[in-house]
Image (cartoon, rainbow, N blue to C red; front, side, top):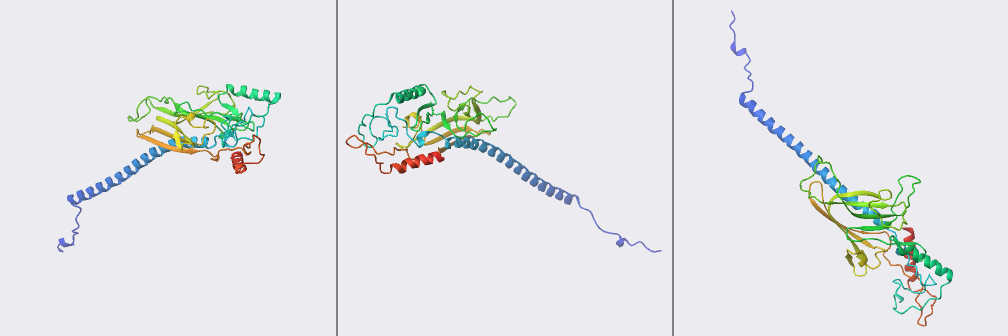
Length: 334
């Protein structure tokens, strides 16, 4: 009888308990690492999304203002004011401030020839037309209405612009329009809508009001006129808003529009300063400087001032044609 050989039986062994515990521990650490990396990636994506949303909101608001202000319109960017007291509207003088003295020499300008009755009546109608007009104060030498920009305080700026684009064909809207940027009341939200506890109460909104149905209306934009004025909230949770205007004479920024000579009819540059809270409750502030598309040169009369004897020489002043043509051509093509 053949004896059973114990050595022929396989001697393979399974994992011990310690080996299994070690494997489980390693697997747990690997799983925790994968979960941590995935969670960090998700958190980064959420933070980036919120940051991009906040940046998009402020950049959209500033881009909207840049679009409007870059196309601000006034005939004084390329022409001069019509002198209602002179029979010769092409003028042989250089009296832009209409003080009766030549701006270059400071001499008294001789009295103009008497106006004809027809011209007197026409000028009188112009004066009456703009006496009570809030949007336009006078006309240029070409007969174009000169808009009167409006900024009663540093948080409001209303101006005339050619930035309007019709959304639908044959819409009764002008290419020109009045636009106002100012602070408005906060938007009422539902109670269950999430809002950061870091955002204080009583904040305002940056609102853009636009009216293009009748750009030559005499009255200022009425924010309560929903029928003719379109309102759009550009930025929420605004703490402060300030408009500053560039003074070419003093080379400084002024918060008062009336303190800048000629700025009520031709603004050269604007600085916008806004402070707001983003959706995370972080307080942010930005300052941007904008200028329009018009040339910085001040339009000048192309005819030389009167000679010493009080009569016009009939020749153009040195550099007059170049400055006048540059302002007129650039202004017309812009």
